[in-house]
Amino acid sequence: MTEHPRYPICRTCGVQYGAPREDCPICLDERQYVGWSGQQWTDLAELRAAGHRGRVEEEGENVVGVGADPPTAIGQRALLVRTPAGNVLWDAITLIDDGLVERVRELGGVDAIAVSHPHFYGSMVEWAEAFDAPVWIHSADKEWIARPSDRVRFWDGDVQPLLGGELTLVNAGVHFAGGQVLHWAGAEGGRGALFSGDIFTVVSDRRWVSFMYSYPNLIPERPRTIRRALRLIEPYSFEKVYGAWWNRVVAADGTTAITASADRYLRFALDDGPED
Ligand SMILES: [Zn+2]
Ligand SMILES: [Zn+2]
Image 1 (cartoon, rainbow, N blue to C red):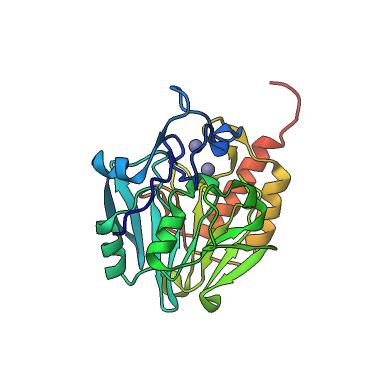
Image 2 (tube, rainbow, N blue to C red):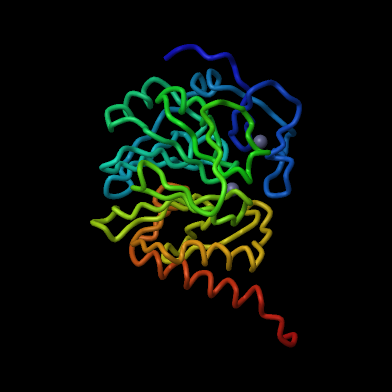
């Protein structure tokens, strides 16, 4: 693939910046953390030379995981969502190389990219350039864009149709104000699927999700923010919920998993009864 200038990548969050800088605002934010050895930078050439390779594996019906092995930074995998109206790359990873681009091309390429929130921006602009695709980001997260680009398409409001309405972005707003989830009504033979990143994170008991303002620092999300998210996704039904890491998938009755998980969360968060 064409040689890119060495855009700096934060080693801790894996986000690529458009120019060299001292600090990483995404890691300085209270939802993340600066690596314990201090701020460190790398770039794509160094990651490739260190032996990171693409990992492409089916995660579900017409849903293919796209990640790195060994993983980089936060270790999330992206998902190529293959629909009759075209392919969406949901979330982004830091690594991109000729092999990965070739394999994704064989699967039909990428018509649009959408990233749940800033922790998963990775090298999204590199991916956008490789596939000549727009990157859909909610405007409430504009301040976190690390590598400005004409490829990034900001949207406002609660919902945004993609690929002629085949899929819908919903500004759930959990974890980040611009946090978005992706709904595909046509998934699973019409029963639907929700792609949730860590806006609704699929937990170890994969029948459930949770809702955190910060995962590494264990700061819970505000109840009112969760209630707003529930109102916004209420019109959508889905069988599966795809979280942000390999095999983190709610396999069945995803709609109920989200509402039951929110009920459980709010029961604990709002219990202000007498002390034990
Ligand atoms: Zn960072
Ligand atoms: Zn996150």
